[in-house]
Length: 484
Ligand SMILES: NC(=O)c1ccc[n+]([C@@H]2O[C@H](COP(=O)([O-])OP(=O)(O)OC[C@H]3O[C@@H](n4cnc5c(N)ncnc54)[C@H](O)[C@@H]3O)[C@@H](O)[C@H]2O)c1
Ligand SMILES: C[N+](C)(C)CCCC=O
Image (cartoon, rainbow, N blue to C red; front, side, top):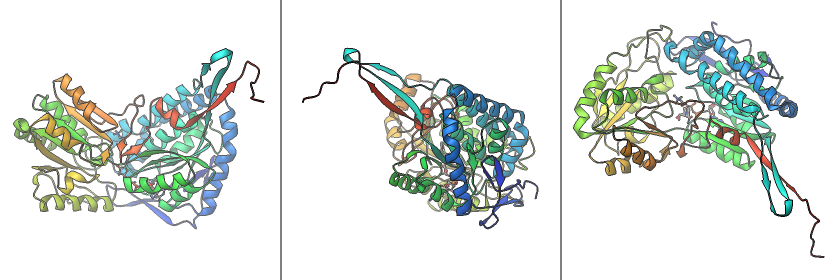
């Protein structure tokens, strides 16, 4: 098979196989063809990964941050050199167009490795002076073995966004990719070893939910970082709480994107396209509830339809193609179900709505207008190329409606009135906000959600706090005063 890796798992610096594990077929979403067959980790494989990660951790943490950082930065360089090869794998794993994967996946992973590699040498505690010459100093320490669990929409990026800060702080990692897209993380593990990471520092085990659950509940694991849906997040967070483990939860969303009538229309349409149709709409932070002020609604919908007609849908390996298939037949069926609900509940289908008559899991970019807040397509995360356009009249009204959701991942506003933009952003109940753009996630900026969309942040200096803890050391410079 065309993309068959050497083996399913990567443990202790080498590929490892155990065909006793349940099969995982990797399907190329553009054709439905099986391109690799892997196996879910057996309990023996999980145990090997845990033993290896545990054994490697102390020595890895004992290296200087500068030494660890050098390895991460070398890995970043290798990823950039191999960007094309890695992008081809990402496209076959996910179905995302090569035009997208070339600029958004291995490159984003390399950014994380480079950024956290750069920070690794400067991780410190602090000195706190106290009365009488006493003082406290704090020591920043690694947590131990960290588990990363990935979703299927950004397999390379997620493997690096979790691995890079974990390793920079002196932790080791066991990463379990989504069973839908298991290929990319193996490349990340190989590259880290090539860059000089000692065996056992970054391991990959494949598997379904139960493999993730076995890792989360193991007492040797100090931290769990999940990217996935809210229902999975609830389970993983609860299981981690039993062992009082650290967690990062990057979960789903139903984010609002508000377009005021003074907005630059062309930019607002571009933002709405980026926030709904990139990766065929399979992006956690997508602004899928697009609130458009009534006066410009007709113009917005007209221009949006014109622009969507320019999308080039087709073979994701064609560099001209800008819109590819959904990741799986299952996800396509889920999204088709939402389209049918939208129609049944009275939303107006402006464009799209159908499956393309070709092999693979292709749905048209779909826009609904006249959507109201109670409709299913305005309340639930669809995770596909379906935009819901809702009308609004006033700022006060739209803010109330925008925040009226259990989710709080992202939110955006388009307006030329910057005073209003900052007022709106202050009122948003969301972790990641945008003014006059959408869905950018540079490594220097914290990324993550509020409310049901998550706990903690990825990227930026803040991620260091989520992968390390401080030891407090009180130093007395005086005699000890005891009462008797
Ligand atoms: N906030 C973010 O950064 C972000 C990024 C990408 C995707 N997502 C979200 O991910 C979802 C789509 O991805 P998905 O369908 O792969 O999500 P999912 O929740 O079905 O699965 C996510 C991962 O969790 C594993 N898993 C399932 N049950 C588990 C359990 N009991 N214990 C441990 N692990 C378990 C799966 O095998 C998979 O690797 C969407 O809701 C999307 O919004 C969020
Ligand atoms: C970089 N993006 C496009 C904001 C995606 C982050 C991960 C969400 O699915």
